[in-house]
Image (cartoon, one colour):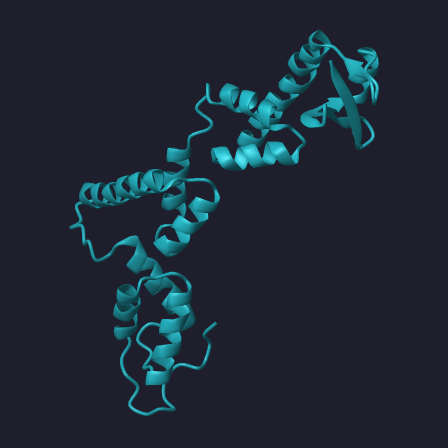
Length: 231
C-alpha cells in the first residue's frame, strides 16, 4: 500500500506523491475517475495503473515537446522534467523512452554548440557552458577534435590552405578585441593592459591574448590611441 498526497498545481492538475516520494503531475479529473483522493492508501495495482496510464504517457509527451523546441542535453532534459514535477524514478523511464529516438544525443549537442559558438566565444567559456549542461570532458574533447578537423576539411574543400593559426580561439579573440578597439588603432601601454585584462576575463588563453594585443600598433604618445572602452 502507498499513501497518496496530492498537491494542487494550477486549476486542473496536482503533483502526486506516494509515501512522500514524488511521482509526477496528474490530472484532477483522472484522479476523480480512479477514486484516488488526498490521504488515501492505494494498492500496488492502482499505483501501477496511475503510473502507466496517467503519469508516464504525459511525461513522454512533455519530453518530446521539450526536444521539439530545442536541442537539449540529457541533464537539461532531466532537469526540465524535474521542474515540471516528475520524480526521479519516473524520469529514468522517460529518458529510456526518449533515447530510442535520435532527438537526444549529448555528443551531437556538444559538436553543434561548438559549431554555433566557435569563433565567437573562447573555448574555455564554451567548455564551461557545456559542463554546466552535463557534457563530460571526454565528450567535449571528442566534439572539439571533430569540429577542428571539419574546419580543416571545409577549408581544403574550398581550395584554401588551412592555417592552424586561424583557429576559432584566435578568431574569436580578435573579433572581440575589434569590437572594443578598431583594428589598427594605436594603443598606449595602459590601453594594452586594459584590453588584455578584458580578453583574459572572457577566458582566452594568455598566449592568444598576447598575440592579438601585439597586433595593435604602439601609440607614440600616452594620450594617443583608443578611448577607455573596456569592460
